[in-house]
Image 1 (cartoon, rainbow, N blue to C red):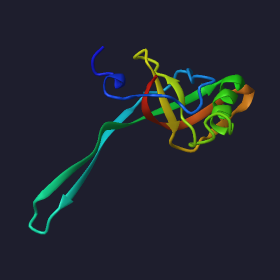
Image 2 (cartoon, rainbow, N blue to C red; image 1 turned 90 degrees about the vertical axis):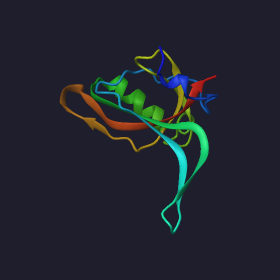
Image 3 (tube, helix red, strand yellow; image 1 turned 45 degrees about the vertical axis):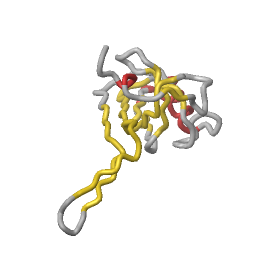
Image 4 (cartoon, rainbow, N blue to C red; image 1 turned 180 degrees about the vertical axis):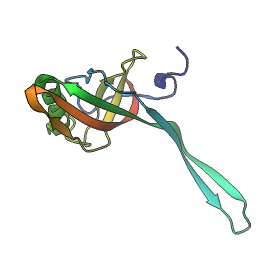
Length: 135
């Protein structure tokens, strides 16, 4: 399928590869992309654009409003465990829920878990920076 993230990203190896995050988000999956380009404006109004890197800078946002305790604990453990993602320190594999590819990502936000009654949990939106396609 043309136009999926894997078409535009390099192949990379994650820092942590013991587990792949595979839990599908329960909300819309926004994919945001940009390019690392510096724009220099001169006094006369002209501009020069410098391409820092040709690879896109890509983020996805995941959210889970209703989870059982085990799934919520798994996500929290992925984020908290210093041997896994350790917050935003280490990259890890994440399986995209619709395009069939596994990407190497890093958390790009803090994490918030909501604990409700009757064993219902939620994980507020978290951002992942997509570094590349799993090697």
